[in-house]
Each structure stands twice: as C-alpha cells, then as structure tokens.
Length: 314
Image 1: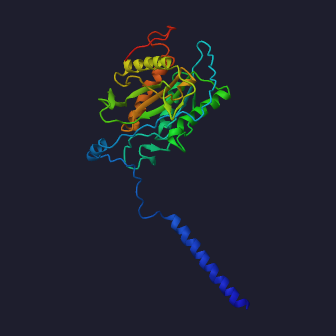
Image 2: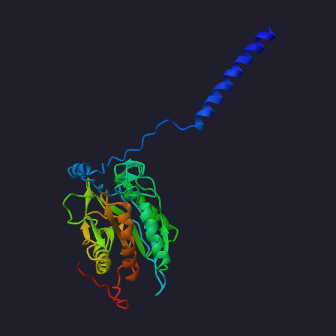
Image 3: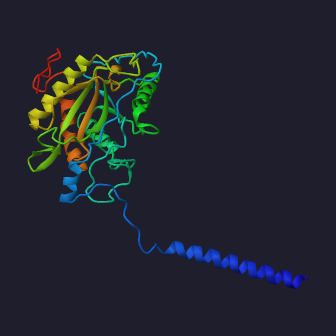
C-alpha cells in the first residue's frame, strides 16, 4: 500500500513543481505586446478640429455643505518684515493638461490624472520652490487629493483641511488654491502668450462672492470678496507689467472657493486643459514674482512702502 501512495505523491509533486516553474518563467519574459494607455486626446490636426466641436470640460459647481456650521477663522498676526507664510493646496488635485503624446500619463478621466508629475501637484511644487528659494517664504504644500469620492464636494474636504491647520494654530498669510481652467471655444483670443521664445499659458485669478445657493442652502460665511479682488488685481497687473497678456482680468462669480478664510485666499487658474504642462510651468515664475514682489497683492512692486491697498484694472 505504501508504494502506490509514494508514486501518487511523487507525480503530484512533479506536477506542482512544473506549474511553479512555468509561472516563474513567465515572469522573466514580458508579453509579446502591451498596448499604450489611451488618453482620449487625438493630437493630429483632424483630431484638434474634432475636439473643438466637443462640449468643453465644465468645472463642477461648488455646493454649500448641508447644515453648514459657522467656523471662526483666526487671523495670523505677522511681524513687520517677517517672511510670508503660504499654504498651497489643490481642491481639484487631478486636473491635468493636454498630453504631449498618447500614453504620457494614466488618466482617471479625460484631462485628469492621479499622477502628481502631471497634475496640479506638479505646479504647486514649482510654485512652492520659487517662493521658498527666491523670496524666503515659509511654504506648506498640501498634496492631499480632495476630489475623491465625489468631485462636487471637493471644496468641503479642502476646507476641512484648512480648518485642520487652523485648529493646530498653523495660520497663513496666503491660502493659494492652484487650479487649471476648462477650455471654452472662442472664450479668449489667445490660449497661450509668447514671452520671448517661450509659450506661456494664460493665468487668471478667480474670486468668489459666496452669494450662491443650492437647494435653498446658502453659505454660512461669506468672503470679504472686495478685498480679495483688490489684491488679485494688484497681482494681475504685476504679471502683465512683466509679461503683457499673460494674466487675464480677474473673474468673479457666486461661488465661495474657501475664500472666506482670509482676505489672502486666492484661487489661481494656470492655463486650461488645451495647454501643455510645459506652457503651464512656464507661467509659474510670473505668478511667484507677482506674489513675492507685492507681498501677496498688498503693494505694487514699484511702491513697496505704500501701506494702503492699491488697485488697478488690467
């Protein structure tokens, strides 16, 4: 009885060993072909013409949180001459730009990716670097992905993050929510501006009044949007003084964009989904200089000692 059992065990072991060996060998060799990830953007001339006829990518509407609770925001007292403290974050973290080639990044949906080398985190990292290295600012770059699980409620999650910093007594002079815009056919004459030999994506400051409602629910706290807008106009003018046409006029609408937390809270849109990442990155130094040379929009660079807030219409 022992011999047949030994034979069966031997045969079973041989089969198992052979199967394991086959699997291991398969890992040594890649499959014969592996298709590139499809980004959904045809970069040919015909594809560009077809894309122009498609509905533009619409930004989600910011919704007030159900039963929103009023939150006390503590203003940071900054000593004269002390470096600015800046928080950079991205409510729409996965926003991305037109790829340079098919398969450049893995998309979560069209013109969006979780890859921080190609989404808004990449631009935030560059802005943080310049503000730190060239202007000596203290910068916190929050790379949290706020879009999941629902894009429409992303502002509620990014606000919770801001409130988390406040609860830990981490207060900032500037709160910068870095985005890219959604392309709309015919909205602007030029989608990028040539500065020297460099193609630069256009920039826009978006200011929320907080006057909108959804299903009868209004925002519990409203921004001091006139001051936010005045500071945004200072930085817009500063950018255009150095690179004419790069910054579009300040835009306002009924959403809030977390700008009730401070009169130094800004939503800055760098280009749109029809710009390339290179064009968007080329705009970042101009934004950084506008922030650094005007103390976040409080004075013009040519009048650094002026105390009163000065505004201009670009």
